[in-house]
Image (tube, rainbow, N blue to C red):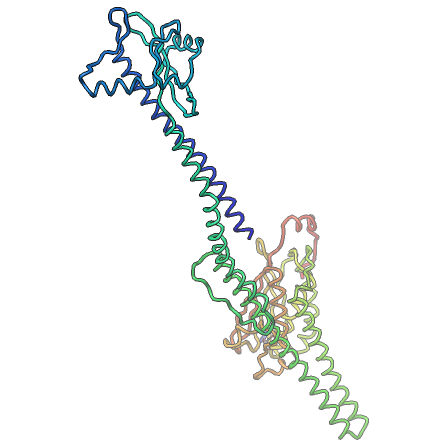
Length: 477
Ligand code: ADP
């Protein structure tokens, strides 16, 4: 309704303006035309009126019918006076227009050019009257000739009347057309709105067909379809996540239950009960770890785990972690070396970056055989921090490489260590990198070892300088 009303209002404004402008233009054209006719008649009168023996007379050949007709036509609405205003000739047509005032006659006599005025006869019919001085052989006379302007005025007013009478009809037609046009434009939008209302978790495969016109509507439908695509993918991921998570949790629960049942039915001594409880506790511990990792990852991915960024000396943080791991690695006969600059400041979330390094180091130690070597390298690049964790352990086959960052992805074949994890470590590592706007890459050769490379943006330089302006002296790590 609003669209149609604006349509009609706009058209009404345009049509009225056009009508008024047209009426004005027509008036100008018609009066110019009358002026030209008056010019010609004025010149013709001057040609026929001559002074002869002290008198002003019409000079023409009465035998010539053309001449006679022309002169009669010119004399139809004519007034001729002397300079005193004494009437010398007045046609009946002119007397119907009323008398000319003496002052007007004097004024017209003095004017350099003839003037045109409007007059009306007794019936109110309009005339254009040209008046001025007629000079012949040094004698001045006042001459006025009239031209009926009724046709001209009528043409103008009739046209305006027809035009403005047609206006409401035209506007009605525009309103009807506008109503249908607005309907045709808005209907597809209504369909999109209706489709949106039907969206629920059960029909996320809903897609709307494109119109094919490539217009705003198509763009809206594309946006809608794109949104549905993303929602669909996210819902599927969430469903998969729930399935995977329940599966991961079920395995240790089944194990615990099995151990406890076996103990209950078969254990005889206190020792056997104790062993069963210890094994069950280990599994409970693992269960706790899985739940903890799951919760952390879920919080991270749902945006509840916001990064707490601050200027951090990453060198110091990784050195502490390397120290923590050195013992566990040494227990397994694995060497751990750290290569890091004295200080490496970046604006990052310290806790999350530590978790990231923790997961990478723990994997490297876990999947490397005794006698192996794990290297942690940290480097400061112009606008980034480069971190590398490499090992010469069992490596990852090419088929698994693209999936290792996925949730619950574990490579089980020939990996005694993989049973301990739930396949959530690298997914969390990837989230930390993503949340910092960094990149992570992995290169690995089965049997030779793996290399995880991470680049994190160092953050705003001003903050780094403000916090670490006088670089603190530190022993080499
Ligand atoms: P998990 O917590 O089970 O170790 P991750 O997400 O950390 O899960 O790793 C996924 C899989 O990638 C692991 O099951 C393991 O097989 C493989 N992986 C990760 N790091 C290494 C590594 N340094 N060397 C060999 N394999 C690795």
